[in-house]
Length: 112
Length: 113
Image (cartoon, rainbow over all chains, first blue to last red; front, side, top):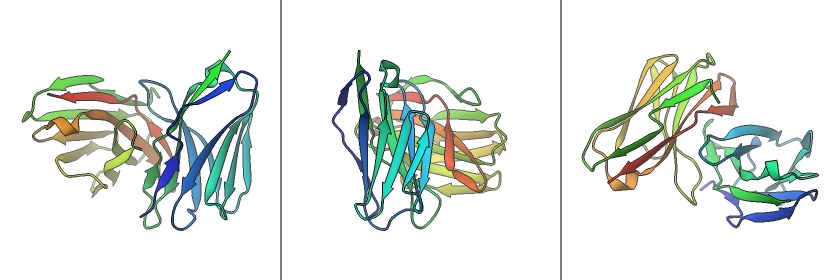
């Protein structure tokens, strides 16, 4: 079955450093992968989408990569700030339809 | 996202009770979704609707029903609530052809005793 796996352990990063989060998927490479941010008590907010034919996508301090050989996407936040602390979710499109399959998310903590 | 609202934000109910969660959106999107989120698990799709006359089951629809009253309104009902339906429920919307990007409401925290 198609799955999305994210590291369930919280990631602690010192302010100013680069935070890197991992998203691994199974089965065929999806047409795209998405990353969302979720703050406590709030709904997920879309950040970035990367398509299968794109190796890298950037948006301000955010960068996403898509490696179809490793079946993995990496999400980077450079020059991290305490305000970046949140849970980050990865999602892929299901092969058979347009439904999204979601990872459980990785909690990121940026320490001052 | 203020464009997608959910009511109530919190709800405590008892086993066997029927409850309804409501979702409204002002984004003008045709597509709407209901998810539940449990600790340690990814969001799971309960139902989705591509327009007022189109309702589809998601991966975990058992014990739930929905109603799409208008383009802007999509309600989720638990006909007879049970404790394992205790979860955080989210409504989301997307644009036709742009279903990749979903816009979420603030969520409803439901506790079934």
